[in-house]
Length: 469
Ligand SMILES: [Zn+2]
Image 1 (spheres, rainbow, N blue to C red):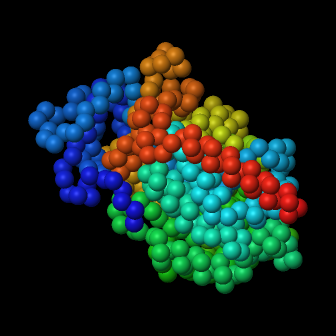
Image 2: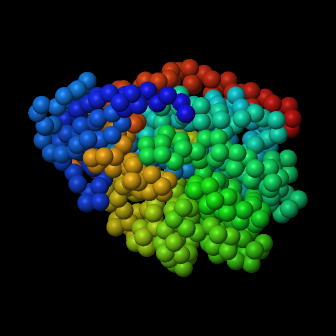
């Protein structure tokens, strides 16, 4: 494991006190303080409450005056594809399947250096905007392209973000009735062996872990039934979580009926893919029965409103999912289908998009939107006992949002300002008790250097794929 730079690792007592700020804890009761305090000790939250911090605390290394700020749990991203940072702005007017078919040949040319630059770009964009736990779903592994998962893991450690890396896979190429070209897929055996290897090498299940691995075959239309089944068995044998894309578009539903004689949710159930250790991206085309099955089995959902709009997939039924007890978090999704790459803007987009659905103005409240982006995401990633809310004993993953500037100062309710207003500036963000952002700038990496590196690698990828095409 990389050195987390955490004072708690040395056993030394080191307290950070934040006070005079509004606090939205996102605990089970949605406790909020109009003016409150948080005490961080090492990598944990020691105290949260109203008014000033208690007198007489020892070992205080830093006091932050949070006047004009709202403090929330750090945001948790539950679905992404970092490598797509290099293929943003392409296939601009396509629905999902056409978009995929246009991009697969380019993606099949990626290598380790490209994935590292793309991961740094994707992570920098999210961390700058208050994400403290990131995830990635990587499923394109061209032969001889190097250690792609390792490149992402390195990038997350460099930026200091908590990370769930999922080892994705595709083994159903065009000649087996799948959507991806044959040259973009692995064999079933190779995919399973590499997934097991990734778990053995990287997965850390301890409390406060900075790195989880999950098993993540890509989607029903790019993965064999055998790989779906065996990946579920492998994950359960190893005690890791399972992730995939599910019920994203009407075309996928049609594909499942034609190939498997059933809809996506029934197919997932038949392959062992419903359960509280599973979360799926999108889940747009769900019947009442599908939602009931997710609620009964506590299968999680990564809701990606911007991406769903970008590829015209539809509106996921988030209010119905929440009513049925389905765990729901938010996802950026890959930045080839959500070029902004930000999660804090998805709080607003989730609320707005769902209000365009049948529940109208009652679809989601601002506090429900904040919960989706924090505790909901932590639950979907299986980390809600550690992070996702501000409570004593939990990990010190938190964000100070500046709400006294032009964009927000006239909005009295700080949660409404954060969710409905313009993207709020991040004054400070902490992961595991370590500050990673100050005044909107990354503290552990140079944003301009990341931007140059990503541009160079994007151009190299475009050149290689044009030459090959
Ligand atoms: Zn995706």
